[in-house]
Image (cartoon, rainbow, N blue to C red; front, side, top):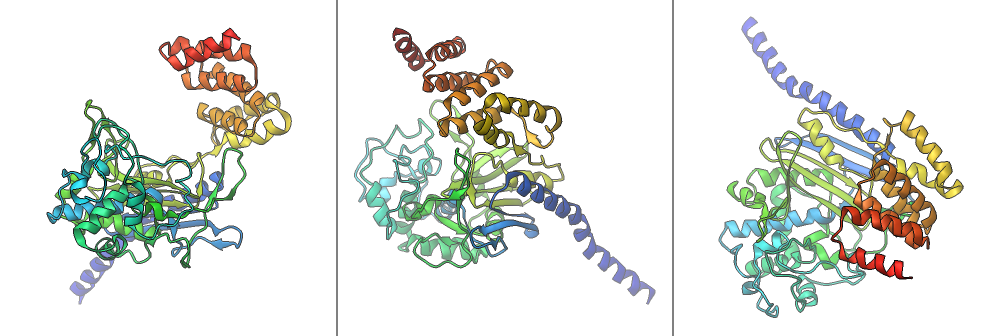
Length: 480
């Protein structure tokens, strides 16, 4: 009886230990998410953390639909934007592992309906954005045109010339992934979306992931918002994503993305050695290296740990999937707005998952100073700036990048005089920042202050003497 009691206690202890070890992680993640939501004031954020196949934590803050006060929750589906590329890449790599396609074969070998280009370009080069296939033309990012099939989109893109010789430059392109979807259809005889559901989403256990058909009623779909440089939150523009389903058109949830990340590193789609193929950094013909593999980013954290994943910035949404492949640790964030100050909650949650301290989010100093500048001018706002620097640097991001943002916001609202004042002020803090010197010169030029514009163009050219475009601009301005 005594022996049985010891066994029972051992079983209870073993079952309880993982939960106990996870509790500090859960508390830290909850605390981080609350502070992030309060600092960044996003409509909503959904996030999660998985380790070794188990979801450890999920968090949801705010509203998936602001106008109707619909809270973000586990079932909420978000546009995931360019994370969609990693889905398509996994499907392509699966076919390569089955010897159905060759990553280094000419794309036009599979797509003979596409007119011949000046250069040969391969599947691998499309995956790593060195093919020369073009990026968006004006209006295509928020396209309103509906395409009924991958073939229709391919026909729309097929006659475009390559922008450069394949392998010589890195040109990020969501539209180019249409060629990969067409190859999937050619190799399998299935519609791209059907193939993705059967061989990627279902094997991973992704029950709520689908492609964003604008005209369909999709339960729990989050609405998208944007905060442009004029800083008022507004509804995102209408966009039909059928032009870029393979490269940026999927909808998903926190749980589904965590499951996808786990399937990717667990051999669900293809043998583990093919993940190494996906993670190979892109090397250009001149020897330079891009931190991008085949359909996913590859980077190292502060401790030199290799990470993989993908960020997404779509119409009304900002997203990130981060994966530490060795220990199968996955984090994700989904935010239903697009803004330049959001940072990367997924990467901060990854620090927590790996036993490190997350960098707590700070409020935007640019957003704090912008209304004061508009209402009372830059001189008044600079007094407020001094107070923030002295008393609130733990609360506000007081880096020089915030002053650049502030100048950009003022320029966007046609307050070039105030923008120039702030840029000039910032150059006193960071006098060798060439981007800042050029921004200051441009703001003075836009405000028709030729003397100050010439002064800052000359300061810029002292640091970057070989910029022919600015030399020409300065000569033209001085001649007048």
